Image (tube, rainbow, N blue to C red; front, side):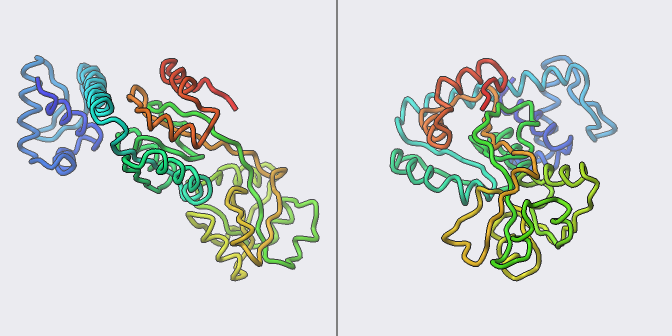
Length: 313
């Protein structure tokens, strides 16, 4: 039995039983993977995958057990590498942080600045994506830490910890009639074209639910992936924006006015995610604490050991 064989069967499962895609991901050949899977099955004396001709069509019951064990073995093998590299190399290495645009643009700049100053020999990489992409990157090991509001707490492979709560606001051009319509209401908002986040981003589900609860159909004229794009189109007079209050920057947002909408939409919780069972290095803990001072090493370790998200804001 070889670790490479375990990598093959786990990747086949991740690729929806598509051996060609697994081979491409692992930079090897399809016949090579098929041969190694058969050798592993012969050694174990079981069939891991169900077959129709040469195609894998499902996972057998014993195969499900084998795949679970294989994932744990591969995770621990990676932990061995991470732990030994930390002790051998000290404060050097690579940390991949995945975050949404809003977090990367508005919440993380000072954190990144301070982290780089403290750990100049650590190569920090930042990946931006949707909450679902971020969760999947952390699950697969492509990212060490993920930060998002939506989706990531729906993945059982992840430990997610709450960082902070935030609300939405409505942004309008200076002098807009809505500024006189106080207090702001959903019925009033529905009279105007709205520009807000794509359905997968930044509390959009809470925006939808708020209008549904009062039986009002919003006129969503345009959606975007980040707040800066939304503000640009509001400035052009294409509609009113609904964005995270975190994304308001008075110095950069000249000509726009932000109206608090915390009473209209449910609050949102930004969460930080790490993969269950992953060995966290000293500088991983340091970045977490810089971003969320209440998430000390002890708090994170307790969550990892407890197997759940015990910490509450």
